[in-house]
Image (cartoon, rainbow, N blue to C red):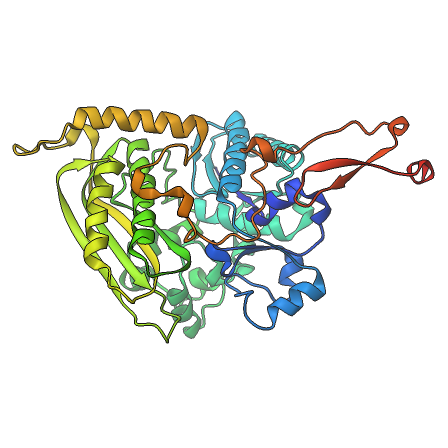
Length: 454
């Protein structure tokens, strides 16, 4: 059987875990540069806030103030750490786990259904009470059906967080209640096409008689055929315990402000190789080609627009952010046009090979063994003391005014010592109470004895 665990409203739930007074309050988490909503609680959805809603546009500012909607910037440091804690709990109970995304986990287990139900309920209880993170679980014979079961566990409290689809009768009933667009593997364009054919539910997809396996193979390709069979209860998508090798790695960011200075662009683009190369090294990979792009703000009609890209083949595959940064700097210098206001830059590495498969170059004069040792020291320092403790001279961290805008950033409660939540003794004799000082650090304040008695 397959189990699918999904953290409910994950980003917003991470905030609520450390600010419990926001339970029942509408909460929204924004994308990079505080652009649009990427996570919203059901209380916020009741006001019409959906995925992608641009809260900086009219009339949302008035709605947020009037309805007391709490808005936060994205905090990936916190979100990633909470995700790791959840997955650590699941690994105590299960062996075969696929780390599918930051808030979703697939598991395969051959235990009997009654044993799986007990283990799943234990996990849901431990994560919900221990981490204060709401989570739901679906159990079925295929990954696609397990993911569908999870949606029922979310919607109906009677399942207590765990919904199994075990019998054929349960499967057919679930398919009747699942819209075709909600099926894992059915994209927007396929949904539109199927709706035009009168296919509204997953049950229609299988049993209406209007869809045949040949049609699926022809118009929905191999992926669609797997989905078709999985909905029938035939497992066609296996657990991926080992992440498939990367074909390319991209790091890009929109600037917090439009930039028209070459020095600021140098500072930004020298930061991206550091992130990109670190990802290569963590996976034991090196890249033979880099691609750098620079883009203006497409939403500013009053500015001259351009999107430029430079592709650079490297003499030897590398994972050194210093070497990649040198080439990136030359590319930015070649692409930069005075008078243009740039909004986004990025770097992608491709032609990726494993470290032991690197082909040397007869005319290469770089001391690569020394640079590899330097990168290991770099990774050790950043791993122990945090990113930003070491940087190249071109990065100029003191001038990061172009950095991603995060005006409503919550504390990093689990990774930054200064942001750790504080617990205090509140015995009645001390006549103190707890009060939030804004984002979750708690302070003690005197209160009247009568108030404490009440």
